[in-house]
Image (cartoon, rainbow, N blue to C red; front, side, top):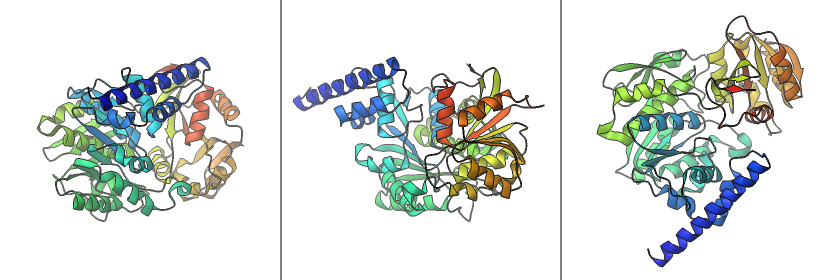
Amino acid sequence: MSESAFVAACRDGLGVAFGRLAQMALRVMRKKGSGGPGLVTNRSSPGLLERVLASFSGGLVVVSGTSGKSTTTKMVTALLRAHGLRVFTNSSTANLPQGIASAVLEAGNWRGRVRADIAVIEMDEAYAAKIADQYSARVLTLTNINLDDIERFQSAERVISMLTTAAHRATDALVINADDASLARVAEAASGRNAQLKVQRFGMSQQVIDAQPHGLGYVRTASTRLPQGEGTLVQQLHSRDAVIDQGAGEFAVTLPARGAHFAIDAAAAFETARAVLGDAYDQSVAAAAMNAVEPVFGRGETVEIAGQQIECILVQNTGSFQLNVDALGGERERLYVGVCDAEDDPSWLWTVHTGALGHVDVVAGPKADAMANRFFYDGVTVDRVEDDLIRAFDDFLELPPPSSGVKTVIFTSRAMRKIRGHYGLTREEVRQGGSLQ
């Protein structure tokens, strides 16, 4: 080992040690927060994350974009593991550098090295660009572009610029959503810079798109569909049941939750797995693995809270909110909506067409008045508006059970965190069908 390598190893060891001490302190204090220990590690050993991400023999797969990153990452991980690969991933959905480093602390040795063949990492779109000089992605998968945070990104053009910077770090393949016209610009810029880069695509059939009442939630939807046989195509979709075509015959899969957004995430995962595995890709193995994938927490997952089955639906932007409303429709008899985001301007709520919900039992949280006002203009009846998020949720649990199905909760990210914290729902504890008291 050279002197410089020895120094780096010692620094990485100290970074891991300090990070794990921070983890222990948080556990003793019963504090939550997956990014804190990773932040300590990154500051103690600034080069550790770069060295870890470059250490996998099978390379690095990065998943980024506005929506669907967490679900797509989980699906890709499942498909690759089903093919026999040992996969390291940031499964907690913490997609900033400190969150990725915290995942390293959980899985790595004394200096952060992880025994795995390949890494599949979800990255926030801004940080995928900001730390672009710290990684090279064998495969980069981009899900879509929409404005999930106007205060943060200002415009779609800025998101396109950031994802283009990330795309320049792809060495072998760039996997993009063919239905998102903005991503076509990213692919053109990336392939123009790297002539050897293979651009692979996934998308929806016109039949599936026509069935979506309010489109796909992208800033710009492409005017043409992905031709059959030129990527992974969602041919048919009904609730959780999808028919997929990858050019070698159609096959059916069951998605972890209902809705077009889950179907397109699955298509992204299938095409990513094919890009990684090449000739070793087995469509039947991939389909079986997809059927067994469980939802990421909050993304259509059903958990038990105080003896009741509760369906949890996280909405983080207008696109995901609209697609979830369209998928949910008026099917649910008991519905709670929690709106508790930090932004001062709740105007993004007004671009969502909510009329299909019909009736909401409770709207709660600091932005409850704004959400209830939107429901009023869409003709949705609301039984109760309450600014206390937890008190309203407690009362929602006391409501009689629905005559069919389960109670459903739609919440924004901060509302999700507050409810999860109040009921002790940690990422590690939540499992499909798990019991949480």
